[in-house]
Length: 508
View 1 (tube, one colour):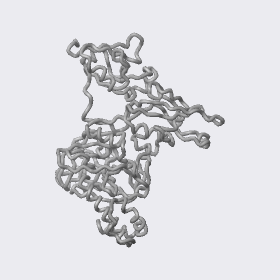
View 2: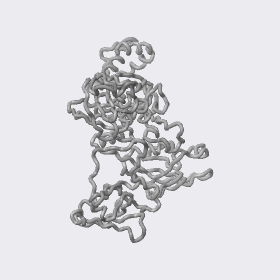
View 3: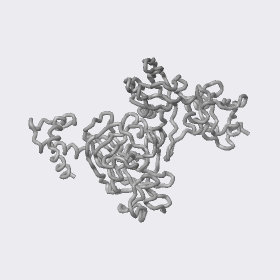
View 4: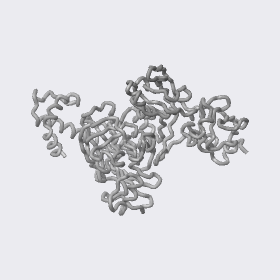
């Protein structure tokens, strides 16, 4: 590896000479450097920095093998179904031998010393149909899925180990175009020997879109993850099959991105690579996933689109609202069709995709200030006002389903969710209480809630006289109650909205 880096460094001597001016920023001491270092000295300094960064981070990068539970499907069929790289002859032989060829493979990153491994969700394929092995220093560990988030396309595996080295996390917000980065991964499943492969390059661009399928139009069709709205770090470092779920690190050895093949899987940018940025929103979601919980993402309740050509020629920027969904935070805040949202938390937004990206990266329940322009036209500047909203929860739809080991315990046999996350919300939104409600998601047969007449698809607006617009508000209202509890439904015929749930010991 050292000779390879030297050859490449010497080939770009002029670049390296310029980079020597940046050495103090990298934490390098120039006390012993000559005043005007030669090209060879500059190359050696950069080379040493790269080698040190790899040495610091590589012990936290692991190989992941995916095994079909039935072990019967052909490799080509698996790749088509699950977007997970496979090799010829996979799935045959002793799964614990180092030379075993798995059905699918990818990379993971240690994020907790007690056996928590971060990877990309698409690396795992079909969770219900797969088993997993994590390889660390030639040793295989059986792994279980602790949590998997399809919106962020990340997942956490759990293995029985307690002496691992978690990777240091950096901040992708600090990345700049041209900055040197290094990718560590498991190309072609070779990293099971404990030696992840390294490749290096520069940050080519920021806030790139993972392309939707080529047949999809501009709206949300095919945009199955947050990254389809423009989050990704683009690099010219070549990322081979199997590097998805690996670490993109800076020259300090800090992870600033989780490598992903989302773009390559639909036929784009095969010569380069992409990574999910490690930023504040990513860290918040990671903590939830490590705890075995599913992150909840914000939902405003609008259908945004691009500004008209005329509006853009007038110098306007933002997202034009085509429609507002009833019984959502947007409707409650008075946002209307043809309004233009220009700022989120006083930061300007460029278009509809940026509006969705900004809001749906925030946790549900977040209070947000939106700057709204209304009534603008060719001869009218319009008026601006600030709308305060509390985000509800986005319903994540797509081929991969959310998974979490830890879920809230049901109350008297029923579980509830944000109304906007219900599969029936869009169809029923016009009939719901505009001030808010929660959706009944599951009801155990013969439970107290079932016997009270509650069913999945119901929407509860009040517990007694208390308004409930989130699961947290619902649980806070019902948990102290020991006797019968009155629940008021919305979107029901007049006179049929009351359901009295007895204490479980009282239910007949």
